[in-house]
Figure 1: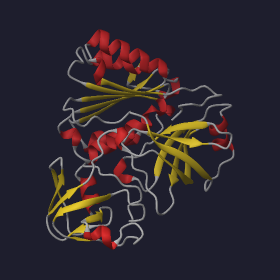
Figure 2: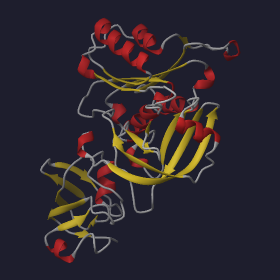
Figure 3: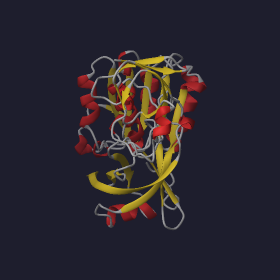
Length: 345
């Protein structure tokens, strides 16, 4: 069955066992949601034409009077016929409501001595809507905030994944690495930030990740692969770290490349390889590797995430030496100060 969204006229197919929201997300058409189980009302929209099975929802969220007015909760409603609906679409960071939510640390995995992969779970009746690449702020008891990028794509939001580097003396990361065992309850605010894939462009993409700047880029790439965006927009990922051990998820981008030959290429770059690394690959600063491989960037979009020095050098050199339009450079710059721990992903 086909569903058409007004006023955009975007249309997408929906299987009989899918909700309108599930089918829209599968088609990479995002509509607002906050829980996915009919409790919050964020996904409420109007049925202009057609019939639905309203599904399991809370009566306090969708009244009988609202149903008579043609309203439905699209996280629960399943089409019985072809549908024409009226609902706001999410295409920019500003389209998504910023929320404060509790969460529980579900797991802490440490692939290296100074990087933790943390997965957090929201309450059963909550989901966080976000664009791949955005970040959240943990709200700590002292009133301070700690910002961490989401490594999760929007379609896989059951658990939110964060990649956190240990900053010696850092208030949050010290506790994470020395005290937290899992099951801790925290509060956060999000989604935040303007680092996300501009899907309206058809230009090929170069990703430049420095260290744990891989986290939001992972979310963006998984989103792109899930929706086959890479088939029309070839993608190259450069991941720059100091030594081999700092490639803390080495097999993941290799798998992306093997499963998507041609449209996706992965190039790891070490700046200070150790003798025991016996590194056969690229050596040097990660943005310099891009400069070596591309003589003209005028037809590309670049997404860069990492430390301020790398971001600044990449923007300067890509735009002045390789013709990259300034508005085609998208960046998320992390800071690593122990006291502020402001953007350590």
